[in-house]
Every structure is written in structure tokens, then in C-alpha cells.
Length: 325
Image (cartoon, rainbow, N blue to C red):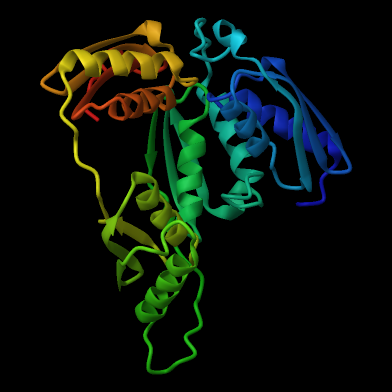
């Protein structure tokens, strides 16, 4: 229910901050009055401040004030460049945290998890999500929350999208045609991707995007826009990005990767070794979460890697966690 007491909201916000692996909640205070959340304390970066404010938007909140959060990069050794002390989380605790996060996340469904059709299974930190939701965004949001929950090292998303009934007023237009028109209009109205010629085709609710955009961000944004639309069950994002790898010496790439990791608020560079061979970057070591692992891959590509072989192990995962991203 959206009619929630300030105490209920405060406890939910505290829980979201406590369980999200991307934020250190130890120096964040939460106050709620008349449905408005006020955050105060200290965070590591502007990114953490923004993320904390985003997490505070649970069901029943009518405003979030994060101006009381002070950004202090000097607390880096204390805060989450990676938690140095491993803490064990039971499967029951993880499942409970996910149910609560889903229940009060407006991006998933602001109702009971049982009513939403999402089923949660946890086995030794590996999460399997099953059931149904009404749109692609809800499916993605549920998976994102699971990946960013403490104690989770693997997520399998088996959630299916089952849209509600869509009214087709034009008898000459079938459902896929209607969905295609909605997709084209949504892309045209988005300020980030409207300047690109994006091809759209729809088959049984599966949307295929084709064409070329300038950046990875625009490619992701196009899919994000489409994911919000009723009737879309799958998105095949075949957009190409106008970006070619620029040749750099291996030594320079390695130095740039080390710099990216050093300044990243998401990973601890001291726990990662970097080797480069003909533009191929190999990352080895241990990180606290899958979010940190992904961030390290992005850092390497941002530094000029042609290919990244991510062999980083995750603190909560198995010993032999080796793959190439």
C-alpha cells in the first residue's frame, strides 16, 4: 500500500541502503517526516550520494532530500572501494531482502511480491528469479536489484513478460503494428536518441532495433525507452555504435587501466592485477561483488583495451570463477 507510516518508510530505506552492495550505509542517517525522506552523513562520491537518494525512493515516499549528505573522498579506505572483511549472508536473509526490495520498488511493482508473480530462489548466494511481470523494465529492474544485493554472486533471470490486454482501435492494424508505432514514437520523443534513424520491427511482441548510434549510452538508452512500453516482451538491440578501437602501446594501456581503477569509486585497485598483450587486457584478483567486477571491465575498456578478459573472482562466489567478458 502507498499509505505507509514514516516509521515503515524509514525502515525500508535503511534496509535498501544496508543490502545494496554499491553503498556503504554506515555513515548515512535516515529521517522521515510526512513521507519525505532526509538523508544526512558522509559518502565517498557524488555517485554514492545520487545512488543513496535513488534508493530512498520507495513506495509511499513523496520527496527525498539528500543535501545533508557530504561527499568526502578521504574516507575511501573506510568505505566501499570493497569491504575488506567478508560477512556471511544466509540464503534466507538474501531472499527476504529481495522480497522487501521488490515489494517497495516502484520500478518493479509497488505491491506484494506474491501478487506480482515474481518467485525468488536462493542457493548459496545464487539467485534464480521466476514468474511473470507486465513489462520489460520491471524484469530488468528485478534483475538489477538482485545483482546489487549483498551476498549474491550469481543471478539467473527466468522472469517472463506478460503484458496486459492492449486495445487496437484501428481494425486495419494488427497488434505488432501498433506496438511498432508506439516504439517509433517513443524513440522520436526521447531527446537522446531522436536524431538517429533507428529501424524498428516487431514480431509477436519481440522488438528488434537496427541502425547506428554514436555512443554505447545511446544504444542502452534506446533499449531503456522501449522497455517501458506495454506490449513489448523482448528487445533485440542490434544497434551498431560508431566507435573503433584506437591503437595504443600495451604499456600505455596498462598505465591507463591502472589509473581508471585507482580513481574508480567502485573497485579497489590494490586487489586487481593488470596485464596487457597486443591490446588484450587481463584482470585478475578478487572483488567484493559482481557490480565491482563489471565496473572493472568497463574501466579497462574506457582506458583503451581492445578486449578484456575478466578473471576476477567475486568474494561471495566460487573459487574458480573465470570467464571472459
